[in-house]
Image 1 (cartoon, rainbow, N blue to C red):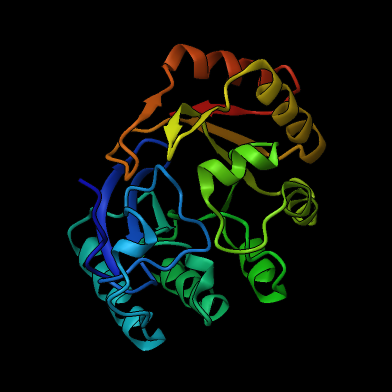
Image 2 (cartoon, helix red, strand yellow; image 1 turned 90 degrees about the horizontal axis):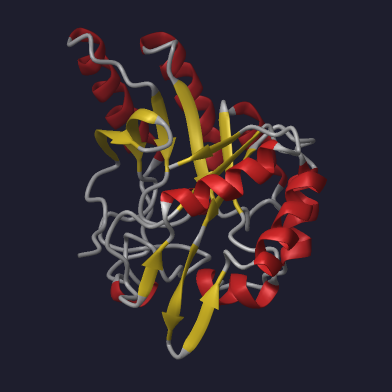
Length: 256
C-alpha cells in the first residue's frame, strides 16, 4: 500500500542507495505536492492526497532536525546521510535554499561526517535559488527516467511543461557535479504499454549520460508498492547490464 510520510523528519531508514538515511519531508504531512505524478511513486497518486497544501514552516523544520540530530548524537547513532525526499518534490518548497543553509549548519555541528542528499525530479532547475542550493549539497541526485519524451510522460506524468531536452540543458549547468538517477521498469498503465529497457531506450539514454557526464549514475527498479498495479520490476541482471554500459563510458554506476 502506498503511503505518505507523517512527519517532517522520519527514520532513520536503511536506503538501498544511500546507507543509513535520515529523511526530511518539507511537504505537507497529509498531502502530496509534486510536479510529477509518477506511476511508481510510493506516496501514491497526487489526487489521492490533496487535503492541505501547507508546507512546513522553516522554524518547525529547524527545531525538528536539531532535536533529532542532538538525540542521535547522544545515542551515538548518527546518520550516513540526511536525505530530502518526502511527499513529493522537495525543491518546490518556497524556502528551500534557506532550509539547505540551516541543514548544512546543523549537520556541521552535530553530524559532520554525514552527507546531505536531495532527491529531485529536476523540474525546478529554472529557479536560480534552487540551483544555488543544490550546488551546496553533497549529493545532488537528479532524475531522468527516459531520453524519449513519450516514455517520460507515461512514467512520470508531469504536471508541468516537460521536455527532456530542456531538462538535460538545465542539468548541464552543473558541469557533471551531480548524480543521475534512473528508474527502469516496464508494463502498462491506463492502456499504454511502455518499457524503458529496450535497445532504443537504453541507447538514447546512454547518449544523454555521455553528454552530461555526471559524477555517478544510479539505476534501480521498483521495490515498494506503486499506485499503478500493472508494473513489472526489472531484474538485477538487466540493471547490471545497463550499468556496465555506463561504466564503459568511464562513469561510475551503481545498481540498487
